[in-house]
Length: 173
Image (cartoon, rainbow, N blue to C red; front, side):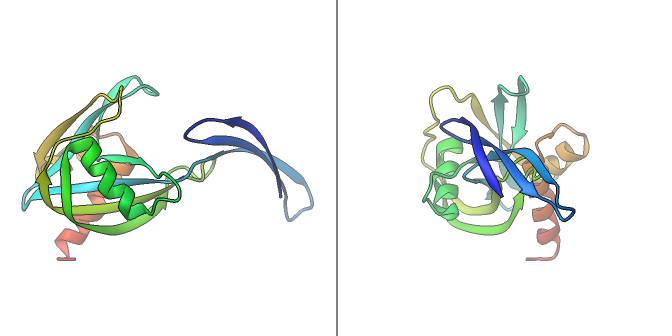
């Protein structure tokens, strides 16, 4: 396998990758390289979760999401989760537990998302990056699930996170 850089930015790069397939043919694909990211389910109390409303330039919409952010290599995912939770929501977690890891769009992107649940939260104040248009959106657990079912939540990592954690909650895990 060989690759050639096409674009390098501060957050990701794009490479053209040549790979020899089983039939001996060389296939070329453009691949987005990303350092990985975290997303966090902030459990405010027994019945409430902190989502965020986040303006996303790429889709020109305010989306309802779980807080998330990019890893800053060589930063471990759990440290990134603590950092991003506080930056985006103002909450500091007493406990952070990793639930799962998954690829968002492996057909073109190598980004691995690490999903965490944060509990024992303390409000200490947000430290949002310049230009971020984020506001906290605290809802009951049932309301969060209804936002998924009614298609008001369109963000894949948020849908995956809420539905997986709901399944684990129902099992007492």
